[in-house]
Length: 318
Image (cartoon, rainbow, N blue to C red; front, side, top):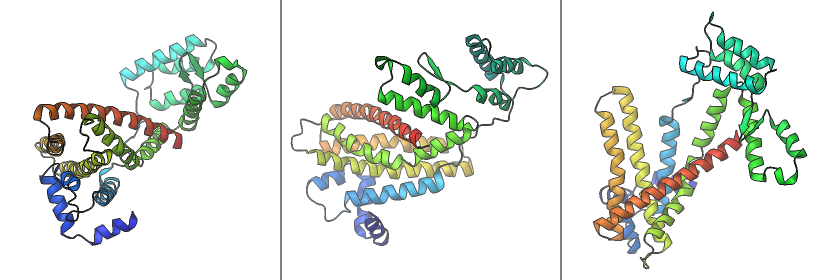
């Protein structure tokens, strides 16, 4: 991959520019040419994907990803709405354990009108009695959870997957309860650096959805849908770079119409996909629109599932 990447950077011949021209201006043309065996005149789609994705994520992490986007102002005053919620929470906790000195002191702090309640005041008693609720059970930490699980009958013990998830959640809660901002930022960084893997995993799944939508096309193999998906992903990388660049430009010039342009550019990706499907699969407009909608719905569900899965992986890394 490194070899191909360096080669593609240093050898911008006519193949690259011809492929780029057809990719942007003629949706569905390049995968159709690939199917017909006319491949020598265009840059290999896999090499193009590797090159484009590498450039995209290089620019994304270097210029477009905002650093330290999660900044919790824990030293500021508690808002009126938050104060109501905090008071109710403290009262509920005290009702569960009426003898708790921690929650009695917490209630005094919340009800004290002589000084401004700050989020640091909340964390001062929150971290002393930080618990997590799972269903109807509450645990203070991993040690307590493990000790309870040991004495439970086998039939009442949590399954291995649930046990792993609860133990990890408790570990994260114990590790970052005094500094939630660091925990959130580490989770964010871990997830963003998995984005290339998430998109790479989603590509064959996207091709599988296309295979199911066009299962009656016996002349098309799964690999053919894969080639179509690769070209679509390459176009998406380019489109997102344009959108991110416009967003960065808008931050500098602050033109009122720039957001409208960004929206139109982003929506053009949907029109491009429809035109690609119409060109490549050669079906009527009504059928193509119907399958376009199904593809987007299935793709949204797939990405939501992968997103949740990769967030879980990120949690296990922090």
